[in-house]
Length: 235
Ligand SMILES: *[C@@H]1O[C@H](CO)[C@@H](O)[C@H](O)[C@H]1NC(C)=O
Ligand SMILES: *[C@@H]1O[C@H](CO)[C@@H](O)[C@H](O)[C@H]1NC(C)=O
Image: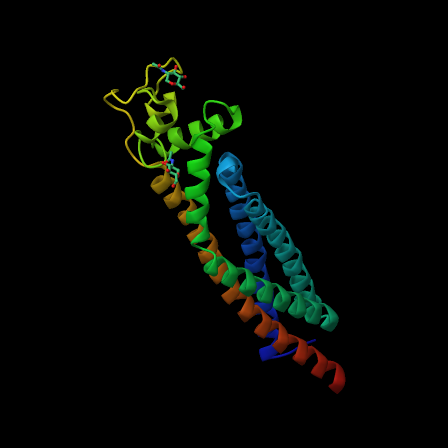
């Protein structure tokens, strides 16, 4: 049995891993939410970005499994398990750092992507039902109209009519026009940029929290591994 101060480390490592398992579930949930948002706006997102939430979901599952290793290792005082746990934790930490730096470097790309995607898809609104659907969802949910405002649609329709989702609770009967009094005037680009940035900030925040807790976990685990080995050597 590991005794004294190290028994305390053992329980702390166990408690920490419980927290860690919960953070794995948190990451998984964030990934699932972002996946939902992305599939909502799939026509506005580069295909290469659509794997990002899937990666989050996988990382969440892996963290959960690693936490399980850590818990078992701590409870059983199994040196091999604790060492495996430390190595896996360190590997995840390094991956997270790389992903975090890449995300930070590329954070402005989202804006460029939205700008080009919104611009190009507007021209297909009346011909492509899928794009029509994405735009309708965006305009309805973000209460916006057109990329920069309702007049953008004039460039496409060459008349005053607007997609029905530019007006609140309006049927698709051509009754929504630039002259409708309560037409949404907000820019979809600005509104969607805010939505995407919000999720970026959530990922960043969760990532920093998880990274710090992992660093603490690695330190705990190394202490425990050393003390377990010392016990074996002295017994
Ligand atoms: C899309 O971009 C082009 C080139 O910058 C611009 O001329 C056009 O007005 C834009 N379309 C919309 C709908 O904003
Ligand atoms: C305006 O243009 C759109 C797209 O070309 C068309 O579907 C719509 O019927 C037009 N509306 C009017 C009032 O002419």
